Amino acid sequence: MAEAARTDVRPVATEVTPAVRLTAVSKYFGAVRAVDSAELTIRQGEFFSLLGPSGSGKTTLLRLIAGFERPTSGRIELAGREVTALPPSRRDVHTVFQDYALFPHMSVEQNVAYALTVAGVGKAERRARAREALRTVRLDDLGPRRPAQLSGGQRQRVALARALIDGPGLLLLDEPLGALDLQLRQEMQRELQRIQRATGVTFLLVTHDQEEALTLSDRLAVLDRGRIVQTGPPLEIYDRPATAFVAGFVGTTNLLRDQAAVRVVGAPGTYSIRPERIRIAAPEGPDGVPGPGERCVPGRIAEIAYAGAHTRFVIRLDAGDDRLTALQLNSAGLPEAARPGAAVHLLWDATDALPVPDRRPPKVRPGASDA
Image (cartoon, rainbow, N blue to C red):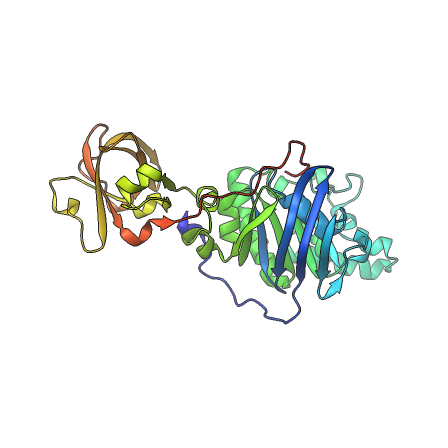
């Protein structure tokens, strides 16, 4: 998944005043710790993601920023203004939800212009601004239709146009693509990225999809059990995970602990080795001889799974019962020994075995409200 990280990141605005600043923000539901001492800064104009599994606190954190929840403690600032105690209506924020929340009895244009209607904006101006917003999301010819006449991707873009029509300082996206099929989800990821670049609005996306976060984000924060455990650009999160949890959750990795680490890495502790960093070679061939700085471990192929662009190998090591997973690009050609039961050498650069702390925040009590 390393290749999923964005390589065409545009320059991010560097204003002194961030779009979002959280200082020691916590949220407890009784004895349940949903968010614990969150510290976070999001820059103006960033595409930022909150990534974590179910129950990690990401949705609660989004609701705190939106104003739907009040923090138990801490401070929330938006564009330099403290909003900790302010209701959603007094924050320069709009939210797009997974279910879109469109009014079925209204046309697309009326849905998009709804906020302007409530604000008392005149009809001519409402129509002009709604049509401009629909042009931004490439739906300017669908204004007269009702939501039921649209595809899932089109309804998602209508929800985006409605959220963007009055130029919010911050757009919150709560798992907005979760209900879409894979192909449409990928199309909408590209569309979200295009719209964010075109408008310059700060986007804050909540997702449990690692590839989505890596693909879209300028930076992201990984949450685990209510705490932000690492923040940074996608490449840094993927290549230099701060903990064993981050290494295992963001992408696929081999986590080696204790005796396995000693056998494979040569030192005790917990280590992460990404499957794509490991190459497979026949023991008797020249490719099976380690080069400078490489480590070499013998084993036998236990499983082979073809996955389109690459093939996944599970190797049982000769020393002990440990297994390592390796990904080989099919375009590079597979080793001659690529068959179950075949003896192979696994080789990787010694620097690709990353030491990672094997610690996690205390587990929250059952009943946390976050998804």
